[in-house]
Length: 374
Image 1 (cartoon, one colour):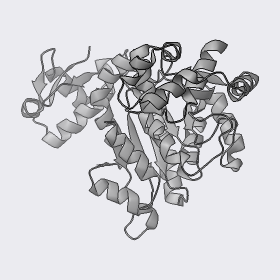
Image 2 (cartoon, one colour):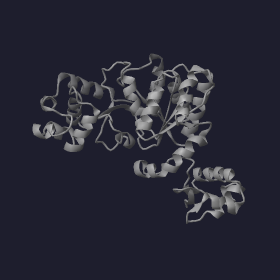
Image 3 (cartoon, helix red, strand yellow):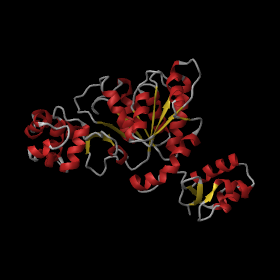
Image 4 (cartoon, helix red, strand yellow):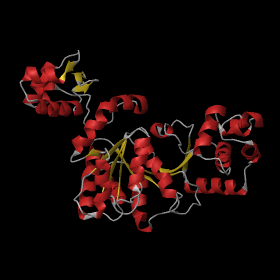
């Protein structure tokens, strides 16, 4: 964006009473902040939720000294601003009910990559830490962008594991991107900016505040295909992220924990309420992969999962998978027919098909029918 566009976005965003939902609606109708700020007051008032007072405030807002200082600081720090209408704005985030109108970014968004959020307790146990490290590394190796909130505990471990695995990670803050919170994560934040991105919808002067974090959680879930919760108390903010993920039509995964352990109460409750119980990576991938190709084609251009390889060769398959692959043709074939013809137990067939799907050999159709991918 040029400086004039930046100033108009910041001016519109600064109007009291004009939240993300209304800004999204205004942009949909008038196309840009310039269109909104130059609109006729009667056309503004025709929109639900915008009365005469708010319409007047929109038309009278200007480039204040506060806006000018914000622009100067953004330029001085080299912070990127990505608006709702920009092509690099995360496509999945744009789909939610109340997407942020403006994102402040340090580093890179990596919006072309499929993302999975990992969240959990700030008071993580050794079990929580090792589990987070395992899943964050595995997701990174599968080509996912790991998203979290850079908080103490699970969030920080998730970011570090992704970085150590050589991948990218995205931290969503509940304060300005020129603030470091918690302060002990200063080095971590620097590494995330070097190897991924830090983003926030909050203006630069915004300090960490308890009321900001539930709001920022919708961004964590909004940019992600699904959210994995690892350790959470019954009052954990991670449960807010899980709820928002469900409301946004995304997947929710949870790691089971021991009974009687406080940090297991939230995850066990999620599982009881219908979240996917996760014991290994296959539990996540079997939910994500069937919808992944459609989402990837629409939002990311092509699959970036390292396990879905365009150079697949049948000779690379283990014997049992190769036998099953011979039974799958161009025309869809049902899993029961595959079990009958292969003489493999249905449970084994299901496992083999998942493995083959992750390798890009086959793809699942509706109703448990399968066809070759090549």
